[in-house]
Amino acid sequence: MTIQDEVLNCGTGPAALLRALPRDFVWGVSTSSYQIEGASQVDGRGPSIWDEYCKVPGHIDNGDTGDVACDHYHRYGEDIALMHQLGIQAYRFSVAWPRVLPTGLGPPNEAGLAFYDRLIDGLLAAGIQPWLCLYHWDLPQALQERGGWLNRDIRGWFGDYAALVARRYGDRVRHFATFNEPSVFTLFGYGFAWHPPGQTDAAALCRAIHHVNLAHGAGVDAIRTAAPSSVIGAIHNVQPSRPVDATPGDAAAARLLDAYWNRAFPEPQLLGTYPTALAPLMESAMQSGDLDRIRRPVDWFGLNHYSPIYARADSKAPLGFAWADAPPNVRRSPIGWQVDPAAFRDVLLDVHRRYRLPIYVTENGAGANEKPNEAGEVIDLERISYLRIYGGALREAVSAGADVRGYFVWSLLDNFEWGAGYENRFGLVYVDFATQRRIPKASAHWYARMIHAEAMEAAR
Ligand code: IFM
Picture 1 (cartoon, rainbow, N blue to C red):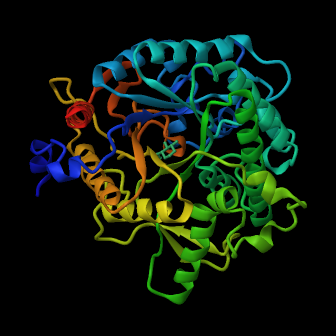
Picture 2: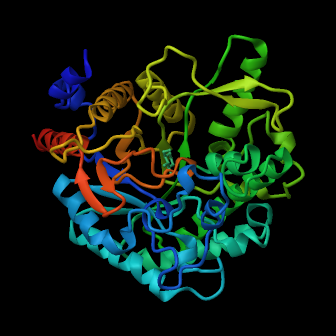
Picture 3: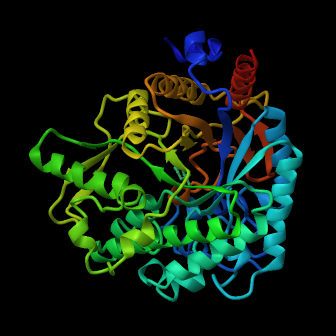
């Protein structure tokens, strides 16, 4: 089937698969604070580690920063209206810790807290459920200067921050997540030096992992206490880890990457153990009772998935393995990520069997470098194709028994894509960063039609 055929065929697919989803299935979109808010020095926001990291030449393609991003801080009303027009049912966003606590602790910043009041109230008025994530990578720089994730005190700092946020918004927000993709910001920040704080140190990586896990446990307890009717989860990226070549060394590398990427957080948080390959490395950071502090009861599993990942043995690398590109000849998205919907189906089933929690797919989507055509439209056929076939894989997983209750596209808007700056676009809505004009892409209209068709089916 060509992409054109897939788009022309852009309904939701066979009726049998339509019926696979639960009636109250949630269709949403996701974003994060640093990637869209901008207003980095407005209304008392403190600096984050990403503000500092972006200042260093060479860290971000094109010298881009999140200083302005999508200016969502000022344009959130327009963005809510867009979601409303598209029929989006839920919106996952993150709170910028340095916006509400400019130095990470101490006195809160009322102007920053008031921004999220306006956002949440606007969402509710538009009939959109707010899903609030506490941490999507923008640690206050002041805490980094106290050691950041390497300082065990961060368990308490995060717990206090979680309590503040849950007390303030728990009357209106039901769904809270502690962390988004902890394995990415720890592995990229302390293992590969691709994210702040830019280290390559296996011991530091393990210490950071353990402290993030402790902070998660403290966050869950704080939210539960401050907002007892909330439903709480954490968001993990789960992607099959494959050897780039069929050699025993690469197979071992893939198993180790799997431990760091897919298991270092959900296993202690949900099963109370570290993966065997990592447990000895955690010992120096571990104190008696820590696994009980980490394994706190949660209500849902947030799953982010885009593609499989690959590893190669590399005895000189700090972690003993290297990140590898997908082999040639696999199907790829426009930014080169492998497209493999069967992997998504298998991951959903595997996570269901392992952790036995309701699953929400909190991120899935495709990156591209598209531009508007002469008519000013953005016809992103490859994204539609991706969403369509990944939606099919999700339905297959549900038909085979996976308890999946919602799906959020990454992302509502083109945004600051970390090291790639603004070049890689993941939005359903195109953003012209020079003018901040928003243009819903063909995929936004496709997603809106799909949500509508699902709602019709659920009402039958
Ligand atoms: O943009 C990121 C997001 O912040 C975390 N998950 C993956 C997305 C695409 O790279």
